[in-house]
Amino acid sequence: MSSSESSSQSSSDAGRPRPAASNPADPYPADPRRAASNRAASNPADPHPAGPHPAWRDALRPVRMERVAIVAPSRVLTNVLRRVGDAGLVELSTPADASLETVARAAVVRDEVAALAGWMPAPTVPELAGRLAALGGAVVTISRPRGVEAPSLLRAGGLRGSLSPVVSTYGTVPYRDIDPTPLAAGAYVVMFGMMFGDAGHGVMLLVAAAVLYRAHRTGRQGHAGRPGALARFGRGWPFALGAGVTSILFGLAYGEFFGPTGLVPVLWLAPLARPLQLLLAALGVGALLLGAAYALGVVNRWREGGWPVALYSSAGIAGAALFTGTGLAVAGWYTGLDLLALAGGLLAATGLVLAFTGFLADAGGGPSGVAQAVMRLFDVVVRLGANLVSFARLAAFGLTHAAIGSIVWVGTTALWAGRPVAAVVVFVVGNALAFTIEALVVGVQALRLEYYELFSRLFQAEGRPFRPWRLPPTSGEARSCPSGSGEACRP
Image 1 (cartoon, one colour):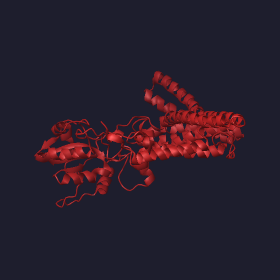
Image 2 (spheres, one colour; image 1 turned 60 degrees about the horizontal axis):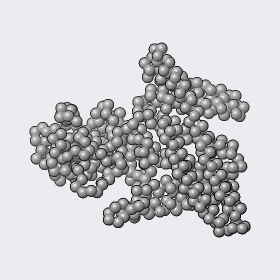
Image 3 (cartoon, one colour; image 1 turned 45 degrees about the vertical axis):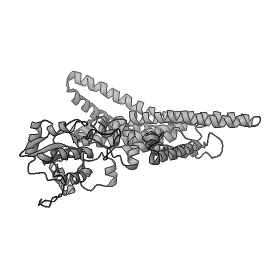
């Protein structure tokens, strides 16, 4: 932020904000909840208004950010900034790795009082305010500048922090959008289990999850201060745990325990005996996941641009209507219910009209705009079918896993009578190879479905990651962000 811009911001906010730290001389003691509530009333564009929210709503949004000013007397500004840099909680206009002198020169000074504007997670405002009060500094909450989106930071504490890479690896969630981390992790392990359905291999995944959890909890540091061999993978224990549970459940449904050994009964269907039913089930799961993605996409489009964007976007109501209407029309045709087929056709046609209108408005109208809108509409229709068919891989890789298990078991039984030792070797080595190769392939395929088929409907833009300013480290140790994921806070 330039000096003139900061000066303008400071003057426009004069008299309105109050320090977040308690001050006996202040007739308005700090109350972060009340202050944030007042700001939400004056700024309806804030997508994360303060106040009590159900836990499930908080779990589906990035960390709420506050626009703040770090204020201090000029004579103690360096000491205050040093404490701000040590805390690593405020993103300033300067680079995240700027020197203390560079940040101090960027401050706006008026009447022996210096100020710097920035962003910080709302829950950490009282903490930093308490740290700065002892030095004579303060954290002042100010209004959000219109047209500027806050930086985005996903919750990264505890279990949530281990799940967040499934979303952060795809990209930065826009601040206004839903953070789908819990839902995305659930969808991932369900798809994994359907393709990796074997109760015995699922037990092996549970063992792997226990090893990773131990590494995460107690094995973070190895010899000579270096990370342990498994420490870098320790955060993945929830995925191994979830994948193990779903693999066991689908393995019981398929009657697979280290292959078709007969140790568990077939509770639903044997993949190799009923491949068509498995394919239809995979498409059904895909339809449910796509429907959920469209529903979340509608919410995101509304939060990004209000009802006009939500209504006409192909990743909003228009796309959801086309998808739902097509599904109802096919269901009505298959069941012979003409009224259901007609209703589905009308709903799909409505979705097409809305999407075409949105594309035409984006293109600016005119003959070239009509041609561009028609091409984009054609692309939406083609991709809609392609995205659903893509979920057939849930059945394809489920069949592959079952076929490999069957081959290993047939080889084992064929050798057992004459060469039992060789049979044991075939069984152990075959299952080890099947587990290793299939787990890798299935993990990649589940992630591919998550990113290309589901996230493409949730997100239409890239957010800006939260990068707080820190003092340059004086040692070789890497410091993680105290308010969120270490990845998001590194410059």
